[in-house]
Length: 269
Image (cartoon, rainbow, N blue to C red; front, side):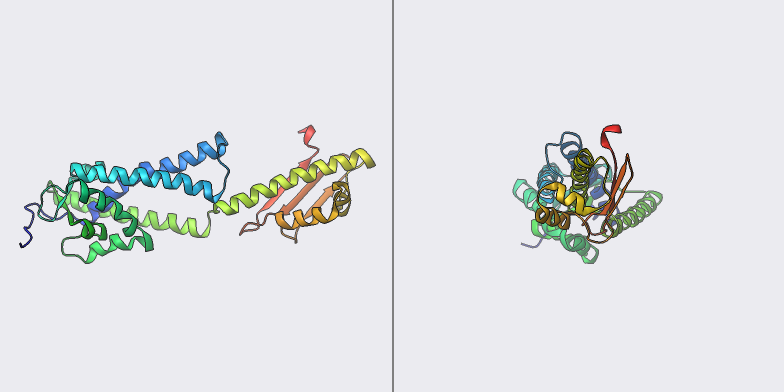
C-alpha cells in the first residue's frame, strides 16, 4: 500500500537541532558531574580512561532510554518545548518497537561527525538516519510565526558555532584522561622524591641538588632510573636545593609535557 502523508508539516531542521540540544544537555552535564563527584570528591573511581568510559556508558544508556520513552509518548521534552512531535511516516503513533529502534539508531547517527543527522539536510522529509531505520518523521505540531522561525534559525547557528568552538578546544587544548593521569603520576613522583630529600638530609645534614644522590638514597639505583623514565621527560628535570629548602621541577609525560613542581620541606607548609 502507498504510504499516507501526515497532515502536519515536517519540522524545520533548526527546530530539531535546538530540541536535540535541550534533550542532550542534562545528560551531558550529568555525566561530567558524576565524574567530578566519583573521581575528584569521593575518590571512588580512579581518573583513568576505563573509568570515564564506564560513566559515559551509563549516561548514554539513560539517554537512549529517555529517547525511547519520548518517542513512545510522541516527543521528548525538548521536542515538546519546540512544538515538535515524533510520529510514524503516516503521521500516526510510532509504537514501542519502532520507538526503541529509533532511539538505538542514535548510536549510528552520531558517529562520524553526526553524519546520520546531516542526512536530514538532503531528505525531502528531513529524515535522519535513525528516522529512516524506524520509519519515523518529526512533525511541526504547532505553526510558528516568521519572527519565531527566524529566532530559531539564529539560535541554531549560534549553538552550532559554539559547539564547533568546544570541539576545537577539546581537540587542541583540553587534556585527555590519559594526559591527566600522566600529570597525576608525575606529581606523585615528586612527593616520593621529596621524601628522599628528607631522608638524605637526615643522613647528610643538608638537601641535595643531584639526582644521583637521591637515586642512591632510594636503595635501588636501577629501579629509580626506570621510574624516573616512566614519569618524567628526560629533558628539563631540575633540582634546586639550599640549606633548609629545595625545589623539584620536571615535565610530565603527557602530550603537552606539562611542568610539575614541588617545594619543600613539606612539613613546614
